[in-house]
Image 1 (cartoon, rainbow, N blue to C red):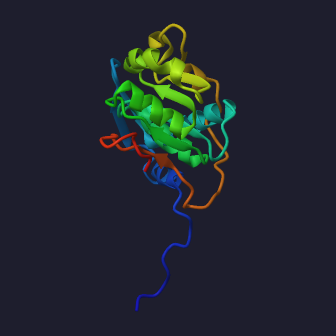
Image 2 (cartoon, rainbow, N blue to C red):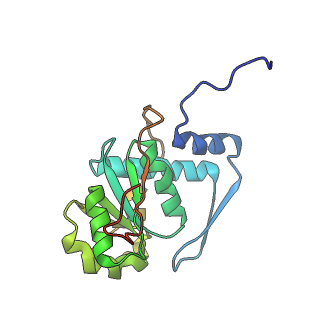
Image 3 (cartoon, rainbow, N blue to C red):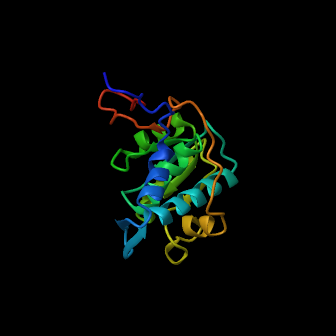
Length: 192
């Protein structure tokens, strides 16, 4: 028998990034964004941006258990949401941009998402469906101010004014963190 016990602590998603920001603070993080130059940071800088994103989401009136949807590709801003949202107890619904409009509307409404965060190249889709989104209170484009489309708020502008630290709450490790939907081949998409 081996001496000692396994770590007795909740397996919180934010702790993955907190560990990386501490143990590998200067390790480079690289992202290729939609129609933007390559973005470079490190885990310490990424942790600060995740805290700013969490503060921004809290400033929008979101609380533990609320749902948000993203309509985005794999960029550093989307990565930040993958830690900020569950780190503060929100559920992140990663909406599938390849779904037909009616299924996309169904999933966002069924998820009861209060905020929709989108890549700039998703604006055309959102313009077609936004009037049908019954629970969405705000739409944010995951872009900088120079590329934020007219009539939308830009993510970089919203997080820029936020503190780069956040009082991460403790909650049960079984708290919902993410919500995905099936493609709806036999009816409406199903949340999983």
